[in-house]
Length: 143
Image (tube, rainbow, N blue to C red):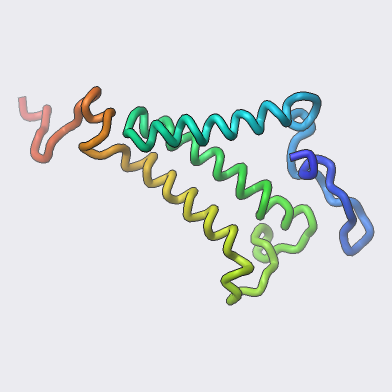
């Protein structure tokens, strides 16, 4: 995150790349706090999702974590250096799977978290035991 806020090197036109992370988030002790927040989010919300406890709440944490990871590692640096395709995708060989490996893996994790957020837990979850759920054919509007 420090490198995202204080880029090194230069572009082709000898100008310094713009920062891709706000100054507020990378000053003082905040970098350490954000790193701990990411680690705790992944650990705690991972356990929540594993056991089906507050699953959608945990999935929100994963979605935010993956969006930040994609921005800081793939999209942001490409935009920062100006080496983009379509304005935001990194400029890489289109048919080289190794070049897109990290971005596609992060995108798959983001989509998995979104699916978990939208679909919610299943019947074998703690959420289903605590909060119940509607079985097929149940409809409260027929009263």
